[in-house]
Image (cartoon, rainbow, N blue to C red; front, side):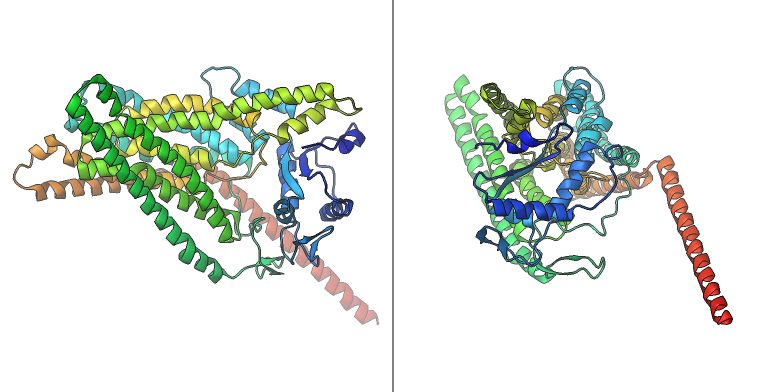
Length: 594
């Protein structure tokens, strides 16, 4: 696409662009003028806050203002009668869907980015990540992800260290895994509770711990009849909740159930392939057929990744079509849809092998193959391939800039052209999902494959650097988003830890060594396993309750802040009352004089 140079050519030398709004080549002048006037009319007069706000915060404000440009009396976009508008419709969304605006993205600050890279990933040393600097450049949401990735990786090290000797020396002795499984259950609870405390420390330092979501702005994709919000008194689109519920229960829910059925059908095809490979190996017994035993699991792992990605696109479309008012509600419904499918798609075969086939050897083989294959595929798709494509495009841009004969800021031109062709970062959803599935592989069947934690640690050490490289050099700079915590993902990880208690207790109860203790009555064995499982769950919830979500000093600071806010409000009310009394006394004196 040809880039227009006039804006770059005429801009003042002191002008520092923050956000790029790329228009199509043939956009009409009246459309440009109308869009410029709407943007300017939205801007409010104010003081220069360059010293107060970071560049990321300024870019977030610009994005917020542009996304909240909504149609009022316009029936169409000027110059484009086919692009219909109605009151309350998001102008930016209509411009994007009509192809008038190609994309909107924030520019990198090359100087600040270089400093961040030097302290982050360019030197391969074992050190903590500069989370505060990441927050200053990319915002709280991305900083929290990298903080959680680092914390989770460090927390996995004890599991890896303990699991390695179990794997090497007591592979078949399931009764000896009771101690390891018990440690796993305590570990999974403690790390999640301790993370809450660390997260509270970080977000308090950043000023986002006590963010209020009650008056969250409507998301850009939300549409409806323009009206007055009865709570805030602001003008915004209104949409009946019963229509949204009908869409969820009559369309989205049946579609999700259909996808779950298809996932189970593919799983049964995988087991047919496993049976075929096993029978072939038993009939021939050659080395070639022994290698062939791993082929069905590898193919199934690749199919799982493909199905997860295809389902993700369908889930995003359905969740957007449901027309949720708030971004938080949209994210919660999307995460719920994706987690349910991914959990079944990734773990259903393992549950089937463990509790239906009861083949522990096949369970270990399948778990190892799924874990390692998914990690390799994620590294290739998320980092290696995008980085290679970006390097190739960077060389092409260099050649264009060198051949350019125009009196413009070539450095700025090169930056805009280079960044506009970069891939778009779609948020932390996929990154958290990868860690969630990894947590499942480590915790659900720990007593069968204790080496899973070691593979997870190795993967995450490379993941930290590859994700950092991806954020800084491969993808466009994302708009920063303020966050108080990792959101619904905390609940997802806690739910997975509860499920792991049940699965590990059941696997230990199924082991031959434990069964040998109850040769006559299987009912006693079942009752004891259920009792132990309930006792462990009770201990888990007591432990979660005993560890406060916020450290004591943070609680005291928040209480102090609330007290000072109330005192300031009282002083303000007293001042207003005094002013009212003075005005009343003045009016009374005037009446007496009259």
